[in-house]
Image 1 (cartoon, rainbow, N blue to C red):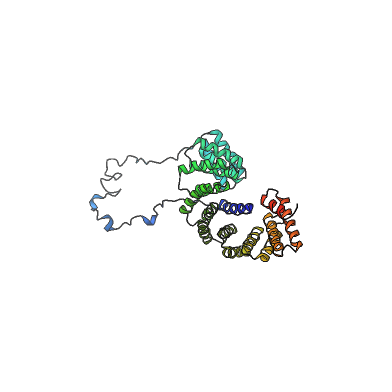
Image 2: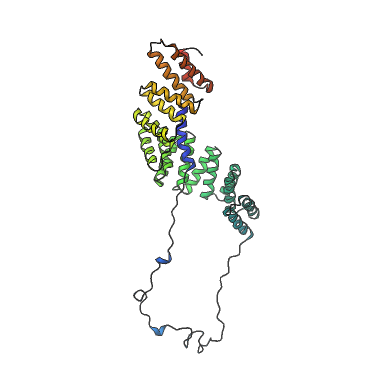
Length: 377
């Protein structure tokens, strides 16, 4: 059953990887409507003799003033002059906005040749490579950006994302930690670092960042799902149930979240609750995994015939599901033993299911032991 457990947990982490969103705070600028209104009470009554109109005697520019015939100097601000690398960067960003990604990539590269220290060109080129499905090239550009600007959160974060995508998990973790040293309150970095630790099977480290992500954005379904998966892998099933329930309340029912919730109930021997959750899963997203988990709960609840039907239903979705084959073997061998070992057909069916499972995955010592105990290969 270990493979199935790992699959359930991995599914909870993958959801989390695909939907993540960041959050940031923006300081609102004053709008015209927020300016103080001008009225006599606000400005006071100014003496009229202190105000000179342009045409009044003695005012600059009036016929009686000393400087009446002199030209008035008007200061005109000149736009800043952009260097060639800045012009290229602006052109590349405009091409990205227009969806001309390949042209933008060439322009970013040209800007880098013009100015090898232009950070935004490296970041822009990396993001375009990412968008074009070139993760290795994107990783290279983001790595160059981190060397150019070691204190750039954006450079370290995007480098971590590419390395996680390329399954360079240890290197990804290192880059995430650099990013969080710069901005420890970033939701995305905390969330994806937790997912990265889960992908490595290190829930005790994942839970720290999953918990932080859920505090930064308590409305994130993915953050709570990651937290539930972390607790489950740590065998803290009551906490896992709480996190999975919170995740389920924050959006539409999601199969990985419900499967994780059902598994936590199974681990606590809450088989009736697990079956209730799994019925919902089978309504919205029937699958081999959902049927197999329902079969497991039914078998543990001593409903062997119903469990057998669920295991067989799982094989309709995936004929090579070893957990379902093993479940069929256990159900049939249980019926064989309950018949005082008289119904040989049940024994044969159990042995056939187990042997088929071993053909698919030979690394199953528990099933090999059952085969040796109850029959011959």
